Length: 297
Image (cartoon, rainbow, N blue to C red; front, side):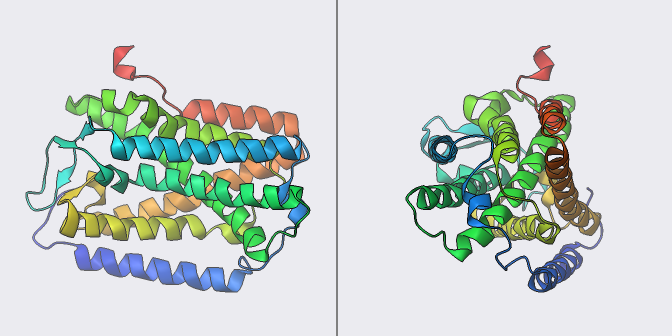
């Protein structure tokens, strides 16, 4: 994370583009875009009634809308410590308005809302006696596994990188413990963990590339945001000009894949033993979450 004699933007861009091409090639040949799960798997649950499942999914959509709406419309805004693109240094700033939705945290939370919206629609259609369209049967498990992988990434980055680094640097972290930040950093994995336990959907190996593709779309957006919109990188480690940027990007995209492996492992354990799987999901969720400022004891 240092600058050298030559910016590594071209190297980082080429590597990221190759990664994207590989992922798209894999997706097109994996059968992931073919309907392989039944309507009952996607729309119902063997654990809770359909009405309860539908209400839960609808409530999650409402929570996402309310949370992101609060972030975008709260006149008080928030403070953060982004990397200023031209100056190449980290500075504090005050940010207010919809531009706050530019962070990956908000992107992944919006993805969670889309996931619950699509799967909730499947539950409603099934409950009303209709036939769930194939595109919903295909997209629902993909959206769920991708959003869960991204949620674990967000929670781990906040808990194990951003909070410790901010405390060492002397930057306050109170901003990360407002109610909406706690929802997006901790409740996210709790909701998705619960969903894993009650869903009828299966997490399939063919979905492994989708979290990485979502990550690639975000890094492209982050570059646009830094160059043409706000002039900052919200996450300093995402500056594509660093000496180590190609490796950092490769590591971040690989983390997306690794956290998908965590999701599929949890899914398999839950399928093998629901009681043990429930304890494991609870333990993982608790271990990676940080619900209060560690600097305050």
